[in-house]
Length: 307
Image 1 (cartoon, rainbow, N blue to C red):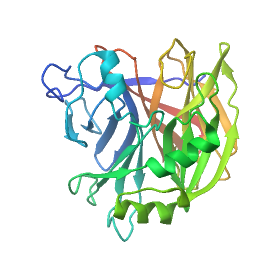
Image 2 (image 1 turned 60 degrees about the horizontal axis):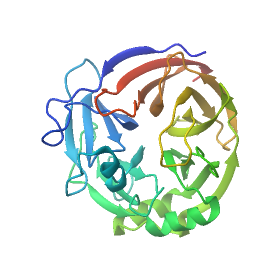
Image 3 (image 1 turned 45 degrees about the vertical axis):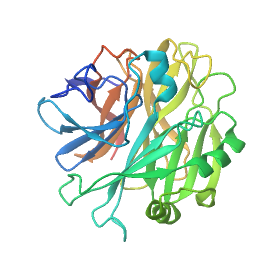
Image 4 (image 1 turned 135 degrees about the horizontal axis):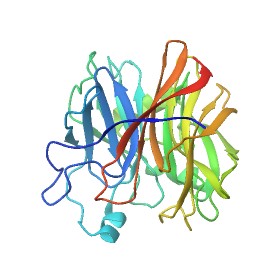
């Protein structure tokens, strides 16, 4: 079992909108860039930004226009459902890299991505750009039926997407996209099916009798990918359900799972940022309580695998 330490809760200096709580609750993706932590929440139109050290409150950056309903059921229908956040390296379009926030695609309304250029110090360099993922996701749904993208990480010349297989008919899968084609698509604002290279299905086992499914991903320098997985007894890819446990694992550069172990806290892990420090893999983790009144925690852990 992986021991975790609670570093802080994701409190904000001000709510993202009047009447909303001053914290992130449904944290679903995490990236560290420079001295900053960036968090997407699956029930928000904003990106949350926190200092990487200390517990000072964070602030939000708007990704999409408009407002979401306050009611839980109505908000669930209308939300963009951003589930994955990854860091793209320097390219012709992004001198110092960029953040890419991807939606789940689990309904037709959940197919807008957002890309945010970065400065050399990890701060945001400009306004976010919206990217339409509809044509890509329509193709992936033909292959996977129950599409539910929850993680994304760069692995060499590929952008590796992790599909979450929770619920009836769901499958856990690795979708490898051609990174150069992805970067070109960001310039025109439309991500299409021509970027797809391979789609492979995986079984991650169970936790307390409930199937484990991918929930996020973060790349390591050697092409490995650290991932999180949660066992949630949900009836389908949209509904929430009781959580039976969460785990952290590692994929080899070819996508094969080479390590997986449970964490020592009963949370629904949804986001991970991994880095090599002192010859070991260290991770930061965020969780979603499926309750807007509960602030998401930021946890940290060291994996018993070499860096």
